[in-house]
Length: 553
Ligand code: NAP
Image 1 (cartoon, rainbow, N blue to C red):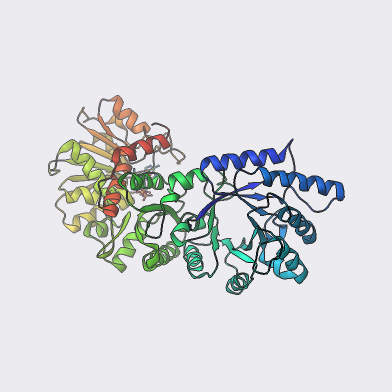
Image 2 (cartoon, rainbow, N blue to C red):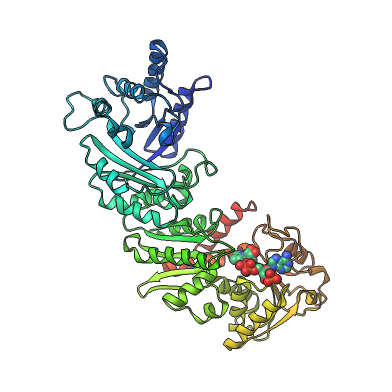
């Protein structure tokens, strides 16, 4: 059975007509493609308030169930399990009975916490009266979901509780959700689905758990949740229904779907899922790419490498995932180069550059490369032709991207002048690349010497000019002051937000040729896509999606 898509809707005890508002949301969820809605009534119902008020509440909830455009999961989650209901268990069970039994429109599912269900024989008996099960003599159709939540992390006694839920004859579906602490939690959630004797919902909460929500159909999860509206701030990791169906192509995910990721920290704003998933759709590749946050700390490079390594080991070793590649971004590019050296050997350019941005898995196993360098070289090559031996390129910056680009340019025979604030770092870079004997020569110069440069092109590899950065309005290369510039001089900015940086605007103003950071982003992504799929990347689609996302489409 395909994994169902369920949209949770909180029914509020406020406003003119909360039932109409909830029904409108359910209608919207249906229009967007949901299979089920979960009506969370714990903000609406707070316990018995006397006969007439109870009867009024029951009438309104019956209307909600009767007019729902989609089958309903009914949930009244108590405060002690993360919900808003703080009344008596007996009151909510009495309500369930009125909504599930003897009505024309009972909910399809009733979600009850395992802890409440097993707490007293009396409560269990009353819940059993409301739901379908082998011993049921009443004509009820509602099926019972027994749920286990932990908002801190993996429950210590998970196995015992899971088995207890499975062994309840009245339980139709088991739900387990805990706050995922790392990507590796998802693997255990998938294992739970695979091993479960009953239909199961196994989801990770928080940003580390997104993978479990998107990949539920790959493992045969009973359902997954998606929000109607963006709740990234209050419920990180819960995708919107639009993202699940559009961005992640949820309906096309199956057992054979290959998994790709963008690994970084933070990684929530990466454009990689947007372009690669659209690209997979465009070329008919059965794959999905999800954000894979791997925690890192500026202060502890060793710990960052350890968590990167543990994650990549787990992804590569878990065969059922079909993990086939990743785009690796800040701050893990250096970690990938080190990991590659230790596990499968890095290429010479990755070794020298000290950074890699791509993992790919093919018939020969896993490997890594750096498509940033190839992107810059190929974009410049389109302006200059194949041979770089007579070209001088000014690289501004000496960080990860500058290293990769300098090694790539030297490999093509160019002379590279590395300008950097910290000249020692530039000299280390020049020394490493020159020692590799690529053919091209690398020299260094103080940033203050840029105006006297006489290069055929300049590449900014610093964050100067980047929106939200420390020097957003800054000029990474003082274009107006450069003495030897003509219409053929190329100015290349690796920064892509904004697309038109102050440096590029100045270069355009002087009539020079410019290459923006989106072109680089698209080109490096195309290199990854081709390694992963064996197909040419739909670069126009990539470019359009990126520019639209950045507000310049
Ligand atoms: P990194 O390793 O942190 O290196 C940053 C470099 O910028 C360092 O050399 C640093 O100089 C220099 N720098 C920082 N602030 C500066 C300032 N205010 N003035 C002068 N120099 C400054 O970063 P990275 O990983 O190489 O990334 C560099 C840039 O590349 C990023 O900003 C990103 O936007 C861009 N990028 C673009 C793409 C794409 O696809 N378009 C892909 C990857 C990266 P010191 O050595 O003196 O500290």
